[in-house]
Figure (spheres, rainbow, N blue to C red):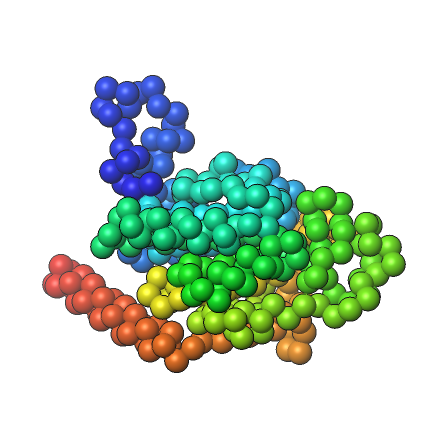
Length: 302
């Protein structure tokens, strides 16, 4: 989806829904400096969703969409789960894969886009839950990393199967008891960020979505690195407040508690040498761009 594709023919403008008119007029497509601060001030790429009130995934979705550096040329691949209920509301191209094969679909898609649009940036971002990523889809997740496929994988870690009643997942905490896991988890949480690093990912982050500026930074870094170098992986803690017995307003505090020092979602980041070099170049160019914009603004006000 691009600015050119979403334009409305003048003859049809007055009969188009006001939401679509607003999207064309005020969306952040093409805005080089787009980010989470655009939420609430310009047209969002997601406005409504069918997730539960207070769901951390809804926060994460908004921050991620606001942080995509190139949404008009981005395709998202989502697996069955709570997130698949949101994708129909998203103004970014997306594909709904089968449960667990999202990285296989993304691999073919990324290669096809490279052939179909040579010389044009086309980003692919996978978004799936912990069951699709580490349990049923682990083989296809790992194989895409082994092959050095150039796309970003984002896992919404609920630490259980939130969409189907609260079954145990590989990312559930040891000893946790859920509605559909009454005995409690008998083994430790799978260390997927470490596995991602050992499997060839060039940028790996483990954190919560309590801080929108941090989400923006890691999403942009992951997309940039995947675009130029190879696979990247982000694991966001997005607790299902219903399944862990919290009230709708307690999701944010739950994430803050989980990100304290020595807790399981304390911020962890791995960056390969090649990725460090690339991100340093991008940071330097961004600094030059801001300096030039500031100079231009000062000249206009003089």
